[in-house]
Structure formats: structure tokens, C-alpha cells
Image (cartoon, rainbow, N blue to C red; front, top):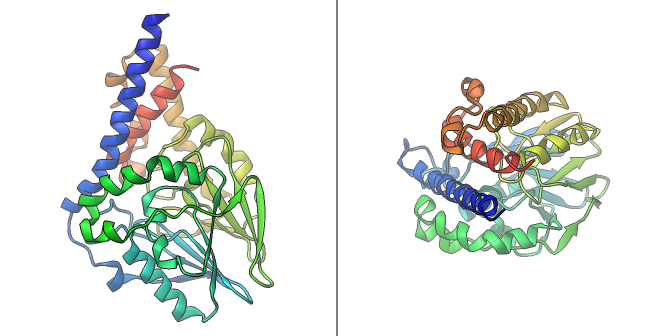
Amino acid sequence: MIGRRRRHDLRCRYRWLVWLVGMLAIGAGALRAQTPSPAQTFSMRQVADGDYAHFGQVALTNRSNAGDIANLGVIVGRDAVAVVDTGGSVQVGQALLGAIHAITSKPVRYVINTHEHPDHIFGNAAFEAGATFVGHHNLPAEMQKRGSFYLGSFRDALGPKAIEQVRIIPPTLLVTNDLTLDLGGRRLRLTAWSPAAHTDCDLTVLDETTGVLFSGDLVFLRHVPVVDGSVLGWLSVLPRLAKLPARIVVPGHGQLAAPWPQALDDEQRYLTVLAGDTRRMIAAGVPMAQAIPQIGQSEQGRWALFDDYNPRNATAAFSELEWE
């Protein structure tokens, strides 16, 4: 029993180390080819009446893209505006705020964070004056637990000046199950998902007027999904997520909006392959270090950033499924 517990502890530590290396690898994106800054390229696309999306780059965070790698949403009602995620730096958040001012003079009433990852929350400080911050009921704890680490680990990727501007701002309006926000003639249905899936604090936003779903990172398109929560939890959430009465989805990553629920098909296949390969390796007695390079390889040609994130996903899946 002691040996079994020790092996489990070592594997947990190994999983944490790989997670840490994965996060630091995001910073290594600074070594990639230079791209225009968000201030030069920031654009909004209207996806429905009153619904707008900014599609971030499918890339790792680096100084030249200023962390502009996540998709962001803007929903305009009769009286006010809601923002869905704010981007991977205050520079991105300020560019988003400027784009909103070009669309409407209505005030930003709500800033909705779909989860705690830096590419979705580091722009929050641009909206601090006057807006109510909204999130999953687990989001404050996740921000507190990881905020300092994120600020440190992204310092090289974004640069010290950019990090000094960032503030970790927890939500004051928390969503336990479902919550409806009214922007004036436009109702937004916010859903807090459980169990842990992409993360332990995933939140979606459905515009009930247009049927546009802002999914956060519960949906990836073209960009390989990233497991920071539970592969089994994510697979269990997908059938329930598919039942939302949406028409199209703006994913957390991937530069397109897509029909709903067909947009889930590729992600569900990838996560199913990830779990299936992992179970076969465990059943065959293959050690973790030898299994990780083999898990999910049939998906390699289907996704961007596969080599950056699949080893991390395989590690997370092995650590989780080993104890089924």
C-alpha cells in the first residue's frame, strides 16, 4: 500500500512538472516568427445582430502578439454591453475596449470570464472602471491559487512592462448553475459547468436572442484541445453542452464561428482517442514516460499546436486514468 501511494505521489509530481513545463513552453513562443501587434491587427467580426467576436491568433503567447491568442466576445443590448473574456494582456484588453467604442457608445456593464487562464483574463484591468466581473463560482479560488504563478511564468513571454500592468481581478458576481443577465431586450444565459472539464471553472454564455454561444475553452476548433481539468469530465460535459439551444458557437480558440452542435465533433473525437489510447497503454503495462509519446498520435495531422500541447494532455490523461 505504501509503495502504491508513493508511486501515485511521484506521478502527481511528474504531472505537475509537465504542466509547469507546458506553461513555460507558452513563453517559448517568443522565439517564434514576429507577428504584428494587437494594436495593428485588432478587428471585430459581427457574427449575429448585436454579437461580435475577436478571433485571436492560433499561436503561443509571445511579446509580438501580446497574448492575443484567445477568442473574445462582445454582446450589445439596448442598454448595455457584456464582454466575454478580455485577452492575454492589458494591451489586448485596451484594444478590445477601443473596438467596443467604435461599435457603440453604450457602457460595458459586465465582464464575463469563462475560466482562469491568462489568455482570457490578463486584459481585465482595461475594464476595471465601472464593470461588474462575472464568473464560475470556482473562479475566485482558481485565480487565487494560480494567479501569482501565471504572472511569474508569463513575465518572459510578455515582457516585464506588460506583466506590471496585469491585475488578477476575481469576479464579484458568481454563477453556481445558471444565471441570466439582461442587457436590455437581450438575455444572456450563463452556465457554470461541472465536473472539471477544460478547467475546474468553465463557464459558457448563450445569447438567447440570436442563439450565439460563446463557449470559452470548452470548445476548440482547429487548435488542439488543452486538458487542464479532466479528460473524463470533459467527455461527460460534452453531451450536456450539445443540448444548449444554440445556433452557432464562437469557440475559445480557432479563427471561426461554427454551426452548433456539429462544432463539437472533432473535439469529442480527439478526447475519445486520448482516453482510449491511454487506457490501452495502462492495460498493457506501458510506463508513463514511454506511453506519452504514443498517446493521441493518430490525431497529429488534424490540429494546430499539436506537438506543443498533446504531450501535456497525454500526461494529464495517464495520471487520471491510471486510477480508474
